[in-house]
Image 1 (cartoon, one colour):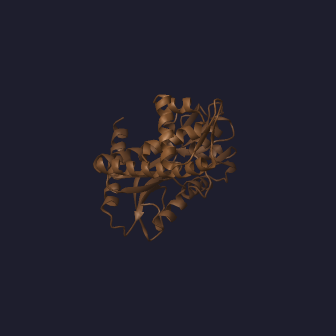
Image 2: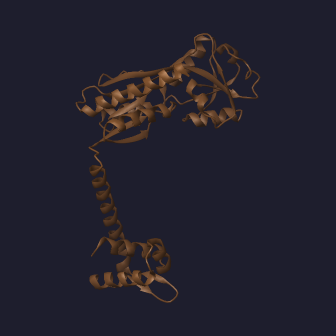
Image 3: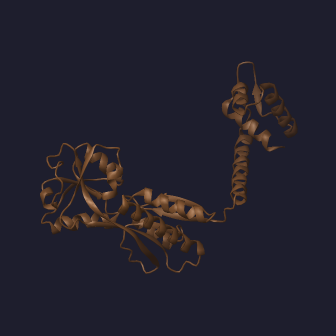
Length: 301
């Protein structure tokens, strides 16, 4: 029995039509019919019941379909692993990415690392507390988070700092201002990220408002930066967002700097303090270099 026979059978079994299956497989229909007949002869059982109008699976065919799919899945996985090894990949690194940060910076860091090392990078977006727990439990190798990181088992390095700006609909009465004081927004409705997703971000906004003399009317929250910006554009309220959010052109918004002393947000790379893998050190170095390069470009732009 060859793998191609299994692929041919699965194609027919899923489409229940020899013509469509042949077209999908890019072979002639008579050839497909012959290969299925060979498979049935080898198994000494009928897998498909064929009439001039329809094709149906026999009971043996239904059971064989389940096993054939599993075999093909394992074969494809083995082929992918072999190909990655052949291309020079050695191992993997699992990286968490926090919400409410510039994923372009993270992508540049990963690209920098991949250009230097043939290691597969597996990225997944996760709330900061979940990232820290996954690092402790060895379900992640590194992460991009908003500090602080208080866990003594974890080490971190701050990669960037950026001020927060206020995002508001262009129809907002203050949208045309060159700068704003935070106290001027005391009567506005705020849209906040949930504390469980990015605690540092959430607390930074509340503390900044408190320092400006008011408690924000945080009627809405949203767990993704694009959702926050979408709600702002729809007129649901205003939001304090990282200055890098100004590069998102999906919505018609006004971004106004805050003066004086706007609250700042940091991005840090975090890893297990006692992780002895050399790739972790290389990944941290790549992240440091990528973020430093972005800062140099921004300072000259």
